[in-house]
Image (tube, rainbow over all chains, first blue to last red; front, side, top):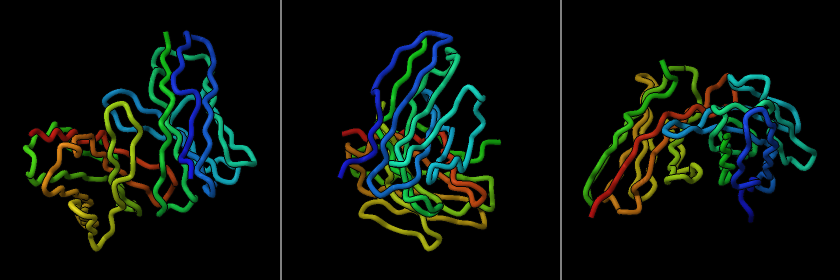
Length: 113
Length: 110
């Protein structure tokens, strides 16, 4: 079975642009979460979606938004990119209950010039 | 104060050594606990869940002390392939987000 898949793998943008990152969860998983990881830090929670509804939001500005589609795939959008948005963006999927571990995709490495 | 705190290391140990990592968490309402492993420039991968009774998976043993809000990971007979960053992860009862520590770096040397 395929794991969590993310696209693109790498992306280079300039300040002020916007970006859309995509994620497909493991088959049967209804929950998708997004995390940002900067060098030397653990991943930081951005959003979680379950059954197309936002179930949680981390401490990120409104420039960050996301949505989940009927097939449980998800998009993360970031507007007005800043240099500080350069990071590895990780998508994780799970069955949706708190005791179930989340499984991560390879991530999208975003560089802002 | 960070919600999940770990000693960042690095821990440099010879092959065959036993090494222990510790982690503390601040929210006493936390419900689920995990250790993830992350190789350089790769995604985190689940190593094991951590249960109150303690649990073992081969050379790896995880312990949870709810009273002290303390989690540990013990690796016995270290292998070169164990070299990675080990992330302590806590899932709070109030939400579904995973809270990650900064990670502890392990380097196993020949």
